[in-house]
Length: 240
Image 1: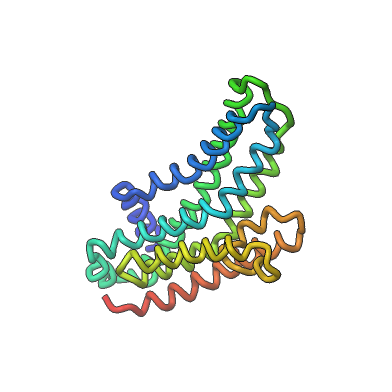
Image 2: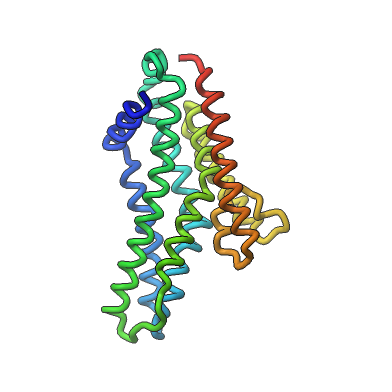
């Protein structure tokens, strides 16, 4: 039963801007880093270059991309008022909501993979074209691990955003919710308890302290699973 709703959700992506968003968000991060590196009047340290991408990604672009993605996925049904029909189908509850959650997490993971590939492309471009040359040897294994942990850590934020987006017909509510969370996280970064704030869990993967990193992926992963379960319970009781 679930696989049918998964296939339906994937097919719906062709009619939305979600796939474009998933390419544009990591692409912008890699492109910005590459342009800045080209502008430097000194040889580019490739090891530093590939590790600046996750910083911009985790602080700003990832939470904003998750916000936009949750709105786009929810508006597929809200915009056409398709819930009235969809939730009357046999077995639709809670499979349709679980399918949306799985697809959204898959898209977030895909964005992380694309960012890794785009950063590799940026490093290759700098090696070939930068007039002053490059230095350093990037640790691509460490980059892949860091981006993977960031994707896991943002599970909690992804499920919170999707819950708010699915529970409200207006796109304004989840949009304000996500933007507010992002900028509160930026404003409180460095505070004593900031590592516990959901929008900063992915950024915690940049910390040199192993306990902060562990807190990020454990709270993000386990908390995300708990929020998903609560979301399914709540939304499955909604009226058609």
